[in-house]
Structures are given as structure tokens and as C-alpha cells.
Picture (cartoon, helix red, strand yellow):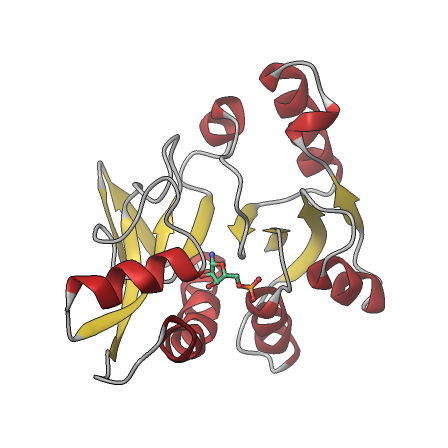
Length: 204
Ligand code: GRF
């Protein structure tokens, strides 16, 4: 299974995917690393592995359609079967979502549907979790549709929220389970074990 990975930052989820591939856990290959930034850790990591990288952002185009066309052309050129959003902070153009229906997965650092949606990324998520007073948080892998963090949920894993947690300590605890469940969800795709029925999805 050919994976296109989209990332906007340091890329620790991208590295977790590469580790899962190297260990034989994940029967896939990364054929493209796309970022809306030109100089982030994920791009450096891809370059170091000889994985094709692409800096592409909406600001380079005068319309969403032109941006979507170029993204679709690049995905086709790299024969992507599945798109993995690994810390990617931009919305996916509608036409890309339509073309890769149920073939775009995202990792979110909270237990969706709670603590998701526009603006809910990075430390904002963990601050909201702490402010809410809940005693459990975690990570979610879900299919991507046109809205942020709304598509069918595939896999979740919880972590405790501790009384003395800060956004940083909670983020670090959640990140460890992100690195566990994202490769497992991708493995299910690679092995044909993902079933989507309407707005629900499950792994067999
Ligand atoms: C992770 O917490 C991920 O859940 C969120 O963005 C953060 C980026 O992590 N989407 P990394 O770039 O994969 O290290």
C-alpha cells in the first residue's frame, strides 16, 4: 500500500509510521511527504530517507480548485493509495476529499467527537481538556471529510489526565498513544480490514 503522508510540523507521527514500516508491522511504503511548510522536521526526516517531499500550500495558488488540481496530480504521480495526515494543520480541499473518499486518515490528540473542530490543534486541545476537568483523554484516528475532525472514527486509545498535568505533560502522554494507534489503523487499511458503513467505520 502506497502512503502519502501530510505533515506541518516536527513529524513524530511520520517517524512512528516509518518505524512501523521498518519493523515489518506496517506493510506499506511512503511514496510522498507533503507539507504546507518548507522547512519542518517531517521534511528533513523524509529527505534523510530518500522519500520524495513536496512543499505545497493554498497560498501558492489563486483558487482552491487550482490547489486541489495540483495536489491530486501529485498524489496520482506518487501512486498514493491512502493519505495519512500526520500533524497536518490545513483543511483538505473538497475535491481531494471526494476523490480519496474514505482513504484519508487523521490522528487527533483527543477523544473525538469531544475537543475537536476548528482551532482544536496542538496545545489548544490539551488546554481545553484540562479546563474541562475530565479525568481521561487520549487519541483518535478517524477518516477525514470536508470538516475538521468530523469523519467516522476508526480507533481510539485513552490516557489518564493527572491532577498536576500541564498541557505539555498531557500532550506528551497523548503523543505516546498516537504513535501506537496511527500505525495500527494504517496496518488495518493495508490489510483490507477497514469497513465503512455510512458515518461509522470499524476495523475487523
Ligand atoms: C500531534 O499531536 C497530532 O495529534 C496533531 O498534531 C501533533 C503533531 O505531531 N495532529 P507530530 O508533528 O506528528 O509530531
